[in-house]
Length: 266
Length: 307
Image 1 (tube, helix red, strand yellow):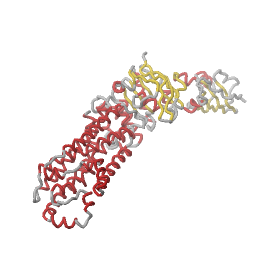
Image 2 (cartoon, chains in turn green, purple):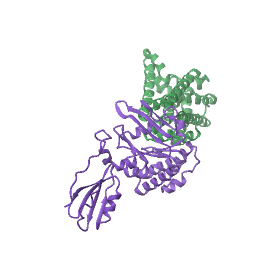
Image 3 (cartoon, helix red, strand yellow):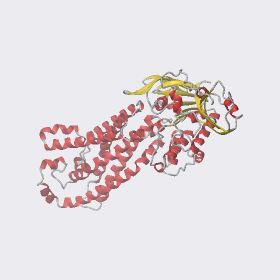
Image 4 (spheres, chains in turn blue, red):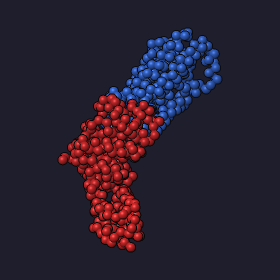
């Protein structure tokens, strides 16, 4: 990786990352504060939720045991907040190479002695830094809010969620980088990745609602994006994290290989 | 002198869209080579293929004896490039972008400062707030910073005001005097006439002619209009390279091919009220190649006689 390129990439992601960080901190902190109320009134909340179809609640990760920290944080913070934050934090820097090609800046940079692979590594590094920073902000916001509530959350387990969250985000960033390099069209690359995420979310919902189609859940990232066992029981989803990391690593390596030999004709 | 750029039968298409076909030329060390062609003729495609940004379908380009595709990074250590669409990052100031590109080229930070002053560029303003001409200046400064032995400039003066164009051409003269090689793509004929040693002319993706600038201009007819105080003496314009296109008693329209000096010598003997010499326009040059045969001589203008 080239320090100059990485530095500029970080700089270009700074404003987005700051705003995503503020949103993440406020939302995650607020929901954690709200958890105290949920835990204190768990039975009432359970009864309230019974009026909704069970399958629908399952589809959105709101299963029985709503007062459990794992179920609550998974449903209200991780499933709802992180896919959006993780997608934005990775897709924007990942597709920057296509935007730079479109505005003619890529030609100027690649006509310097900068090697193509090192240029792209700057973008990949930025994705990882943004994801890690935002995951830390999310966990920190939960843990800080936890200082003001009872009962306390299992802090060690909550801290470990950052690793799985980063792995999930990386599995978005890898394919986004690959599509950006292949298509050299930011709009199409970002649209395809965003569309695939929505589709995978729907697959997960359909699988939860219709048990006959349960198998299709395995095609969805969201099937492997589950924090309930980790937060509740301290069981880290090693296999799921590794799956995400393999997808990310494979896509990034392929991107580097493609970009090295890519004709830059739009 | 050895060739710095050698392009042989270079062909590149964009799917079914034409790019360039069998383009061949060579540029010697220390030469300023003009690459002339109308918009869409294939100038930028040729340059981007030469720089290893595009992969040729057939043929080969070598710069410094290195293959433009497989040795692109080594080639880029020795050149400076100005793109026809000078890329910029709107969120950066000119100083930040220039420092960034200087760092990528291994040049010290602020090595562009003197050039920015020459082009009267305020480097502290975010590029998105600059006018098109000022953005072009950022590209020009970036192209001239450092001392790369080869400059590849793709229509560098379009958008620059006349004063800055003059500054640009002055810099080009300094670069030439320093023995550096320049590949200058342009559709501005006076710019090519002033700066280049040789020209290659590209039309519809094919090279139609390469010649010295002197030969190029010598073979074309230029228009000279004279308003005289009194009718000229008979035979005063009888020169082998001069034709009388039209003439009234004191208003005479001449066409001259090549060397102007003999005609200017005759004009100096007359009592001249006004004289205008039209500069050769690029359209005039390309008209010659419209039939696709570069060897076709330009037709002589129809001759008139003095009244």
